[in-house]
Image 1 (spheres, rainbow, N blue to C red):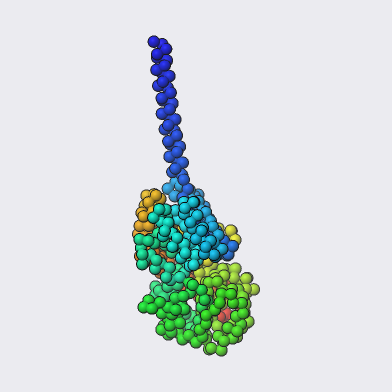
Image 2 (cartoon, rainbow, N blue to C red):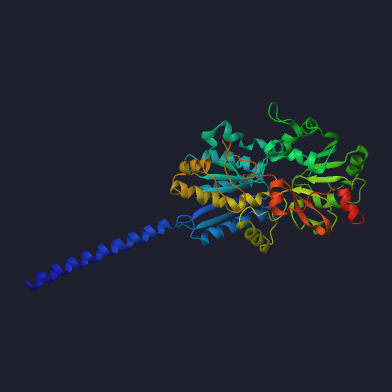
Length: 431
């Protein structure tokens, strides 16, 4: 009897231990699964200033999310690939990030790269659902993909300004030239590259050419030119501009060497003409020093100026500068993008159902460092304060970079400062 009791007790002890061990094991496995990282991919031209800025902004965003406990308890991991502005490399990187690394979200960069990746992504999506956020992708027609074939491209969102923003009355871009600058006769120059197509050719029935747009709104275009992004000799162009009788210059740029351009402008017959850039290195606060202090009066979109959208704006800019990275138009989407994903996952109740995440982004409003992000049916960010604005800054005396458009943000940022015409700034500086 004693032996039977011992056997029975031993049996039950072993069973008890096995049950406890099983529960412990399941709990450990469950905890491990729950803490599996949410992976975000970046396909960037990492050796370029804008590629480095995008990565730095994403790093800051993800570091902050993880420090706050991740997304629903799961850490976020960034995986980067360098496409070196070569489309085949971008496509290969996209396949790797989605198929091998299992990224839930991939950031793509550049109009050419993003467009090519979108085609690959549409084939991968049915078996590997994921999201794609495109930045440094300004081509107006990019989100035609979503508008024309929603079911095939519904996972794509643009977290970046569009060339169509120039025509958006809510953003007051034409009013900046008419009312703030006081431009009457304009020299319009456009770099010859894919994203500027709508400016050069227009879009029948939708958008006029940029030249037609200015003239329709009462600003005469007295000089018009298409420029090569590899151009280094700008003096002959400025001599023609000066002879045209223009009072202002609008140079639609993205990849043009604006440092060399400004140095030559400051020594040219056109130096007293107001010069506005679309984007490029001129957006950096360091542009003043990069040009040898020749940038007096230069105006550019997306300037590296602290605009206090939220309490996080200043903190982010400080962290970005600590990483020795510049601030560009893509920095906004790079920093806020992971927070948009976080908000969507929390709204959807998890990260497993990408269809739910898409609906959450489509119907939600998200804000972290800057304006409120909300998306229209084309998956374009909604425009006009408190949504996505178009901001312009001007270099004034001693390289002071101030905000000059739109007024609602000027009043928030530097209410006692305003745009000053280049001729007046040169007069003040004794030039």
